[in-house]
Image (cartoon, helix red, strand yellow):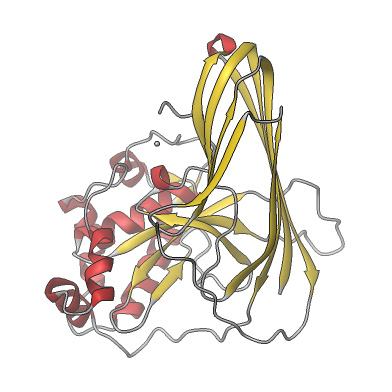
Length: 315
């Protein structure tokens, strides 16, 4: 499956900005099952400097500065991504919850040791007894680990209301748990918080989800959006993604941009500006379009080995 993704972000400032320093996580990453055929980032006004690098987690990040007076900033990223077809994964059987915890605790394998960094607190996710209690009954020692995670994924989908007006990037996770509402970022953070509170390793994944119009209707331009989900580590296997907002295991309609400990590691666009009048208007438009259907040959791609300021944040 091939997709063309356009992500446009525009800031309108109340007053002139003299300088701006920004970090963008908007370029899709190479990972197993996903190949990036091309990705181009355009910045208006033209930046004084622009550096693209691979961060600690293997994500592609672009640092840029605009050192000329401006009253608006636009960042447009065009990408073509190919996703290999995959068979649905069975949740029953396989590694048990007890076996996952034992492997993470012992750290005998390099992959297990590396995964443990995703089992600790991070800037936006703190473990707690309340989070552990939310999912404790699902993770009995001898139960299939993936089956338990799948049920946690479904529990969040069923028990929480998707409410874009409820939260912001600064809403505490405890408020999301108490009010049973939020958006995809909140639900991903919640699932990760539960997993870590029970001793498991889980990471935050940002990207895009293809949305399809109702039958007989034309898809509206800019109708897509950034999306977020989470992934859990399975010793001796790999990481498996889950999307609690839609109660699915991401497959060929989810496009991965970046992953980290939580949203703060992979904020799509953030930075500091000098000037601007203290107010800004943010507009975001995302288009995810299929450009090819067919039986592509499967492939594995792995990101290169791994070699933040006041935020102007985007969800």
